[in-house]
Length: 603
Image 1 (cartoon, helix red, strand yellow):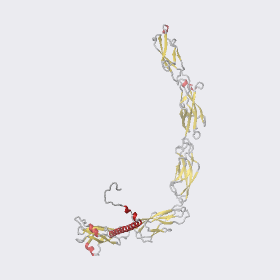
Image 2 (cartoon, one colour):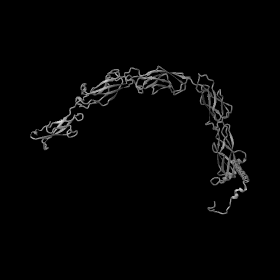
Image 3 (cartoon, one colour):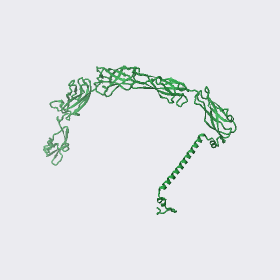
Image 4 (cartoon, one colour):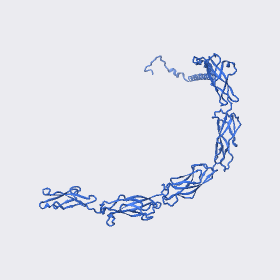
């Protein structure tokens, strides 16, 4: 109640202003204007408005202020009318297995809308239950003021219990069970895996087999068990060989899905050399075992692998085989023996059979039983099938195993040159002037043979006919080249066949007489022919004459065919005229007008 001491002499009226009176929220507080008694009209909620600031006024009946306004502060006293509320209904946390007591796990938090400075808002936490209750019903504890959850007992083992569920209670009034309000939440704690279990082989010995000479094949599956969480570094197994494979013919890969070890052949194995392998293998995890684990870090086993004998192809020795032979070896001559070996020593097989696979020039044949190679034609180093003096032929050796197998071998014949080719003149035709100057013709000797059966060459003119040496002279200018020129001052234009004798340097020498067709012509001051057309016409070759005759014959045949066709056409026309009635003859109905430029009526 408010009261002014001037109410003894004056009739006063009291009023209040401010939030909760005449300002929103309005009407919560009212004042008796006569007695000045201040009253509350509605229940108050401290969590909404904790205090109200009002101003009281005193005026006379005329509304004149008789006192200065006074401030009234109304504090709402807190009552415990709110329960604690957890920020999450379900809390998730993790803890590694094997953690020591006192290991921090997680923190849960609840809030209370009541005054935090009073008992109504002071919370306390505790664990109501733990599921499962193994290995101890009290594996965890909680700080009753902060909500921190820690471990209090040893024995966390993910392989036995993977998850714990705790019911957490928060109570206000400092945890007073009688007067405090409570609420609960769930804490789910997952036990994470550590590498506390090494991989263990499911058997002491594994068995496999592989055909010889096979690679990239899986010969054995090694299975292990590991209690750690699958597809983690603590579960993934790594395999290595510790013995039994000194040459590195095997490797072990890990199947990422099953964690099995796949023993794989990476190098060919020969049954005739190794019939069995006994490997020692070890398995361990990608990460080392956790500290304090008593188990050995790896597991060992043996792998017994049997090699299966298969039919292998024969192979020639040596391959390729090189033979040096002079060309010119006659047909039917024995060249060499080319045989193969069969690596299958423990199979019951008959002897090998030989056949020819490739012989470009068809010079050779091979005996199917003993592999003896003989010639069927003369060996020629200058053949188009010989490259760089080398001729290659391929032969086949086959066995009668199951299945039959065959191998190939290459015979290389290095042909030594003999002087079996005489040199020839090149080019075959030349042109010169009919006067003495200029009239030199450069010629070249060509010999398919090679040194020393080729150049340097000797060039000379034959003694007969006598006109050759009378009209011409030849001079060698190098080992392969010579110059032919006129000996006389003037030679009538025309085409002349000049025989030239060329001898090589072989032992014995080989020589030949080559005809050089020389066109002699009239020349201008520059030495160029001016009557080439006349000379070419005079020197028409045999091939050109034959071509002209063929053209004439074809033209005559075409003319004859045209005449025959015209006669047949006339006969057919006469036969048709006999079948047509003269009265129906079309020609009788055609009118002829000797007028040009017919008009519109001329249809």
